[in-house]
Length: 78
Image (cartoon, rainbow, N blue to C red):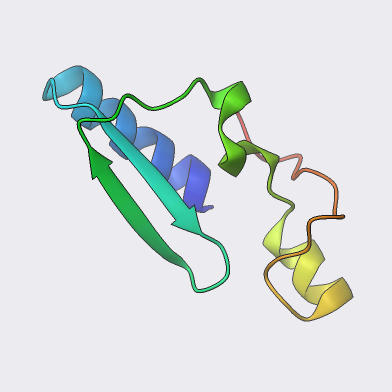
């Protein structure tokens, strides 16, 4: 949800429509996000956020929002 509904659209709008490069770095532990203005966002395939597992699966299995051994969420889109 964070990546598809907020991170990618906001980065795209700021970078392409406003001409101000923006990289958003989500913190999946506390659900916050760091906004780095002036930094061109990486391609989706190289963005660490694109490798995150689905929150619902993580929470059900492990009771937390982060587990590096979980598989990548199938709902993330390039």
